[in-house]
Amino acid sequence: MTGQPSVITNFGRNIRFRPRHRYTPRTESEVLAILDRHAEGQVRVVASRHAWSGGIESDDAVIDLCHFDSVKTSTDDEGRTWATVGGGCQLKVLLRRLRRQASATLPSMGLITEQTIAGAISTGTHGSGKHSLSHYMEEIRVAAYDPESGRAVVYTWTGGPELRAARCAIGCMGVILSVRFRCVPRYLIAESIQRRADLEEVLSREAAFPLQQFYLIPHLWGWYDQERRVDTASSKPSWLAPLYRLYWLGWLDVGFHLIIKSLTSVLGRDGPVRGFYRRWFPLLVARTPPVSDCSERQLIMEHELFRHLEIELFVAAPHVPEAAAYVREVLEVFAGTGTVSDPLRARLESVDMATRLDSMTGTFTHHYPICFRRVLADDTMLSMASGSNDPWYAISFITYVEPRDAFYGMADFLAQSMAALFMARPHWGKYFPPGGQAVEHLYPELGTFRALCRRVDPGGVFRNAFLERALGFDAQPGAVAGDAGQ
Image (tube, rainbow, N blue to C red; front, side, top):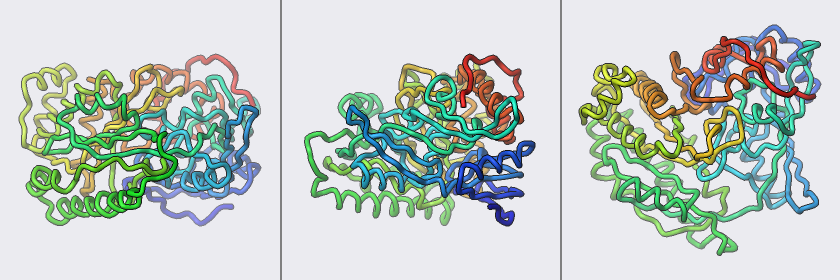
């Protein structure tokens, strides 16, 4: 049930810790026994370790739910397909079993499928053009604590504030044993790559291509659009689909990343990076015709082939044009290829950050396309796209450079300044800047969320130092309506 203590390192190698106990339970009763054993300690769940934040860290106990990987599908009276899935089931396994059992698929999909379903919903994993996966969970079963007896029990939440909190709780509401959600029939996605004149043109295409994601290319400062829409006119993938997949795998997923890795890690100079994007990128990334393929292939990327670090910031749709212009100008200052304009200085002075940017001029040249993905508003308390009727846009910044001190400086500055200027929210599963990154004003229901967590975890067993800081659990407990029913 428990193994020898060993060091746990995440995918990005920016998180490293050694828990005293490591468990791989096979039954719910074993999970409850573990929680009772560590009722005065600390318990976190680890899975694919593909997050960059400190959410998985524990110096006491960690639980691996790899044996909780069952997938059961059923059909209701209205002909809808439902799936009940063990919390430790990897998305790639889940997709395969949904396809075999019911010719169905997930209602939303992120870029990678290495994550477990519990890890994906706990951090608000999302794709583009739909809600995050968290939004679609209709039932969540967790192992947590009874506030009266202090013993571990199983809660089943099918509605109310408890479900909305548990849909994206970063592990603070307990150990997710299983989830239930409505699947969708398998479908085709028509996709093409286009270069656009400006952001206005990109955004004007969203009505026709609601699943699109798009990229701001550094140093070229041009826009590329990965146009996507559901293809209802076709009954099977187009004959070009295998060639398109080969193009993505061979050139974009492997070849392009090898070039960036070579320019940044081998040459280690900024000039070649800027030259590559300005001269060669437009020639090497070609416009493609629309190609239809199943969603499970079109919507994912081999994003984990090369080890990297990522920060992702969410801004509400009305702020996107202004935020995009801000990002470009700030990145040029960091690269030393631009200066702080008077409007930018005035804006930064309003949040007391102008001097800080001055001190960082020329310290880091960003070397990866900045990806924008639209996420519809979630019915959750704490996912990054919650608490608004407007869609949100996730803006991601990736680095392959090590050591990462210069990137951390840029990421910390962007997170703090964009939170102040645009109410930007850092992704819970990506790099989360340490210190001073207050989220109290970013999440209106944070007080209610903390109260719910305290109810099912009065001893703070499911919280670590990262979560205490990030979620402000040192704040005064607040009231919450309703009961956390078992």
